[in-house]
Image 1 (cartoon, one colour):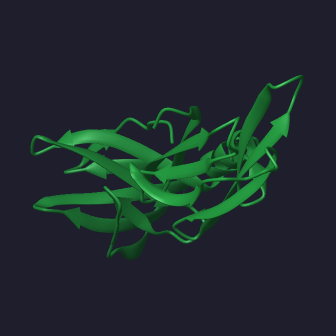
Image 2: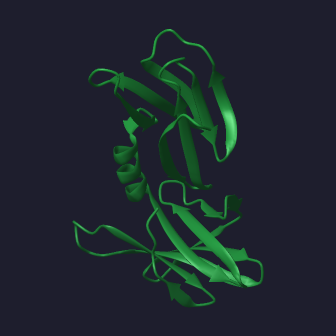
Image 3: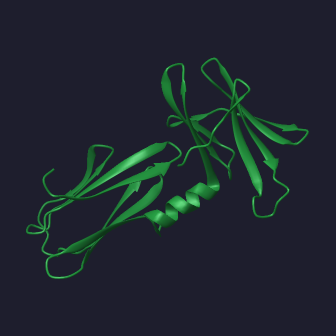
Amino acid sequence: MSDIVAQWDVSLSDGIHNVIFEHGTTSGKRVIHLDSKEIFRKNWMFKLVGREVFYIGKHKATVTIEATSGFAYEYSLEVDGKSLKKFTEQRSKTAKCWTLTLDGIDTRIVFEKDTMDVWCNGSKLPTAGEFVDDGTETNFHIRDHSCYVKTVSSFKKKEGILHALFVDDVEIAESTL
């Protein structure tokens, strides 16, 4: 991988995916690596600018190559038709993420607000929803640990609905996606 020109991290429910893009500016070669696996390759291309489309799970991703000045190029990544920055901002509105060490294992838990799905280290977990006095609880287990995401109203229009993760009845601080 001698022609690496760009690298991005894409945070999804099933984990953080690493995208590496290689571009041979003399040969036009284009190579895309996803999570250390080569998923796309074109060795000789006369057109040095353009787009390459691939998928990260069910999400459509596009690497765009644009000429800036002379023989300089700019590379960008779009996910689901949005710039990576906009996609990440939207994801932060539709999902909550927590990271913790559980039984000596780094654990990443993601709660999808729109579907109420819970993911742990890339696997979707079975859940059970329950109405409680002040909101709802989405219950699940990680090994021998009882966990739930508590959903309550903030009673403030700007804050909206709040989500908190509890593992063995201890609240876990939220992480960034």
